[in-house]
Length: 478
Image (cartoon, rainbow, N blue to C red; front, side, top):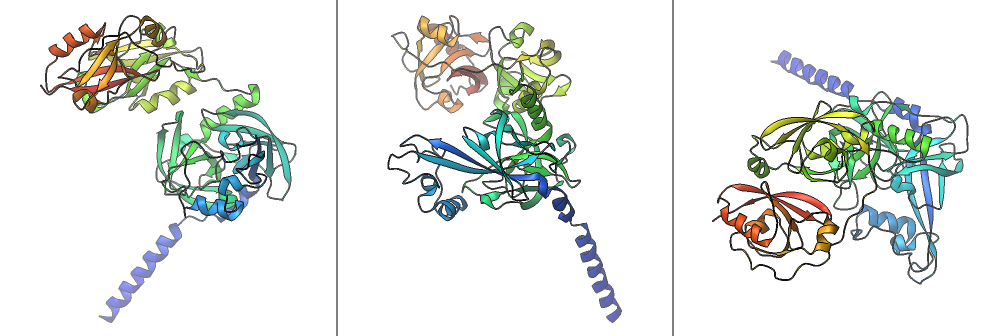
């Protein structure tokens, strides 16, 4: 009995030691890379009366949250409006906005990568090195779409980071961040890769790395390291209901960041590949309406005129399933692929059209600046509320057709009451362009088409909303 107890105790001791030996040791990684990580502080001059407008519109700092405590600790009870250099905050006097961030040195002659939002609109950028030197930096280039900025300080023989590849990262792999959360310089946090290829609503061209590494205000622009001491990402965003870390952090893949930085260094701007389509996810109901076995791919909701997609013969309602031999599982998969594609080169695109697989060749163009049209008026004489759909529609004026580039088709939703259309997501102000494969000519045609549709089956409805197009699945009940 006693021997058995000794044996069990020895087994437990052995298991504990094995488990402990498998835990990662980050000390060497930190020692080798700390000097290449920098603290970035920016100053922006404000006009009189603007001192209280430093936070994004609609952004509130929850009382008692980490951000609330941060602002009170560093900037006084006035919060952002009481930042240093912003006397009074609301007394109409001019002031300054200050922000903190992180970055990392990529060349011995002083090139530094950080986030676009860290240096945006800054009048002065100061980079603090580990040896306590503080150097004024200039912006070489900044790219809003990727949230990457390249800045430079006047120095030589600087320590630099080693570059890795985000493509080789695996979910579950240990990663480490160094940065200046809440101004605490060279803070180190660690975690694992939670997911890859995440798409966030405001960033269509970045397949983010999701981690559970603790990231807070001030970490933005700092490096994300793998266990080999190589930079694999640029810490950029968090998801939070409190203003502080909640276990969801997002980093820009270093492969994306370096391609952007190289273009900023050579030309000051970034050129991206462009097809000229608006896309959305294929839901289960939409897949049913298109005769697909399962939801997959990127559904084309709009093809822009004179775009590469139009020239290649891509049509509204096509579902793109492959680009250059790479599978498109969701709509968020496509933009980063196209954005990274070489402009002027041709690529094979596989798509599903009306249940049939097709292949077209697209010559990728350069992504232009985007402008969205504004809704104006309609022709008089809206139709009564349709009992099958629950909406009332009206014809468009010639001016609106030209503005929306919808030729002679489309009707405007004047009223949307509870019913199948409202349940599908159709709202007042939407322009219905198409129902299933039928382009809508006018209100009379719309009413006739609705009467002919079967009940209990999902039908695809294409609407235009605030300049963008969107497929919605509507199921009529009677």
